Image (cartoon, rainbow, N blue to C red; front, side):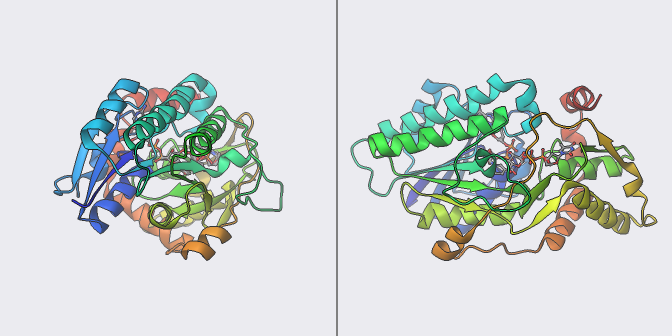
Length: 349
Ligand code: NAD
Ligand code: DAU
């Protein structure tokens, strides 16, 4: 193997697509997937590539400093792509400390381990931190987030991600650690955990349950197909400049209510139900506290410097996504049993 790349959070939604992209595209690279398998981590997401010769799974918790150090010493990675995180805004509102522990302390543990392993020679090494557009706060009706937009996080989740971004930059500035950061907009696609808007609505439509829309539904997000995010991470990991951050987006803004109506339309068609059936389930519910009005990414930098463009339109990506859920209802059943029911009742009671 020419290189070893450690990917954290590789059993999660985006991480599993990144692992697949790297394992299949770089057969000469040893890909280590480090994941604690929290409620959001699922090795079923990687069934198709788990027997590849260049893939190794390691169950470990990034909050445990000594375990992280030991894994770095054992596998000696040349590169790190860090995705492991608590990722759901609503959960951060009920348990902020969990987000500090994983997203901030966990990131610092990884930075320390990389610094220690690479201290004698940073040549050919890279720490890629996968972050979010939520660190920039909320936009009004116009404007876009650029890499120069000031950080202004509002939720405990986005505050923890902003903090981790600052630590990553501090390790570059203080110790010279070679780092890159990507700040991406909302992802959607296969393997998305059904606590997030799109898979939650798909699951509820299948079960004839209400589709909970927070507030007036006019909140706006910029949606990107998850495989295109994985490809952007590959571009930046291999071609980005040390110390730089890159915004990644879908050029694809939707108000939540319009998005859910589009989803309902496609679901009715695919399920052979009369038009308007799923939309009858739309229910406006109590708003999310501190709800950011609008996110939208200016992806000019990654486009011009690294040639990034999303490969599918939203209509195509959404259709692929719905088909995946319809063909993988066992996956959906497995992840929505047990703890998920308790979470759901508490969140939407
Ligand atoms: P996810 O919740 O689906 O997956 C997170 C993964 O991290 C899971 O496999 C989980 O088991 C693992 N994990 C959690 N805590 C851990 C710990 N303490 N130690 C080791 N592993 C742990 O998240 P996602 O949506 O795939 O997001 C991945 C990353 O991308 C996150 O850093 C998130 O902030 C960022 N991001 C997500 C989006 C999005 O739309 N989902 C957009 C931009 C950026
Ligand atoms: O912007 C990137 C971020 O996108 C990532 O950093 C986060 O990890 C990811 O979870 C996502 O955050 P959001 O809060 O935007 O995603 P979520 O799917 O939870 O919500 C999308 C929008 O839909 C948001 O405006 C809240 C709203 N919503 C969500 C849920 C779960 C509802 O109206 N009803 C719901 O039940």
